[in-house]
Amino acid sequence: MKVPIVGLDHVVLRTADAGRLVRFYTEVLGCTIERTQEALGLWQLRAGNALIDITDVNGQIGRMGGPAPRRDGHNLDHFCLRVDPWDPDAMRAAFAIRGVSLGETAMRYGAEGEGPSCYLQDPDGNTVELKGPPAK
Image (cartoon, rainbow, N blue to C red):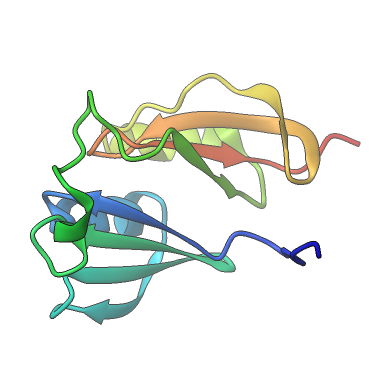
């Protein structure tokens, strides 16, 4: 039996500074806080049709994952967010104001095929790929 996967539901990022990471994803990338479960040390952020969960390494969920991630010890390679409309120059300018560097735009393969994308890093050093529409 093949599992009928239809997309990415959520990704969970562990952090030693949940407030800083929540601010980054809401203020810099424009996610919204959908739900907070402070007893668990969990903040769930809406990212289009998916969620980015932020969990404090000292919270109930976060303690199960071992040491906190660092710039030289990550808990994932990267995750990719599909962006529409795609305007890398506007994104680059908006991120620069917040001190966030957006990498070079290049054509890369993703779920919808070959299309433009670029990378940035969140305050914990997690790499986030921003992906535009597939090339036609």
